[in-house]
Image (cartoon, rainbow, N blue to C red; front, side, top):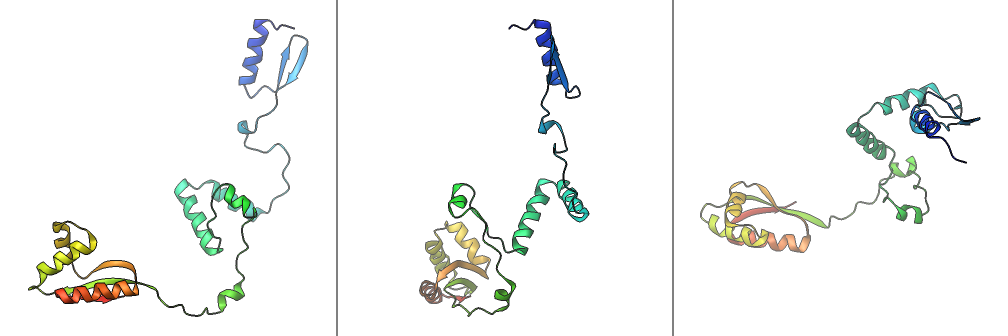
Length: 185
């Protein structure tokens, strides 16, 4: 069955106009399915919602992208929700987020763990040994001579962060030998 061109044009016009619910082609009338993207209300009547929830949903829908990201971060920290990887890895792990830790566990004081990583901070540099310290900082950090000089002139400053205890002690000893006062934090 072929459709005359004017009937096809009328049909297309009706499809593009969301206000007209039906299309008449020759002798038959066809209903245009309503599209979700064209409406703001759901097709099925919603159950009466809690007015408090409705108010929260209205407020969230008015947030911009940055405010929404802040809201998500706040909720994750408040509810102790860990960041889950996106994609198939989360589904393979069971498909559900782990439950938040009970309040009773938070009240217990965990055993104090020994600190394994330390920061080395240069406190002061002797004026007489400034050149030696600059050279040592240059070799430790792999900086240029100019950057090393700027670093030494801006002490007190952290030289290395998250260093194992043995390495931190070696760095501290080396700095003290060339004339700098440093501490391990």
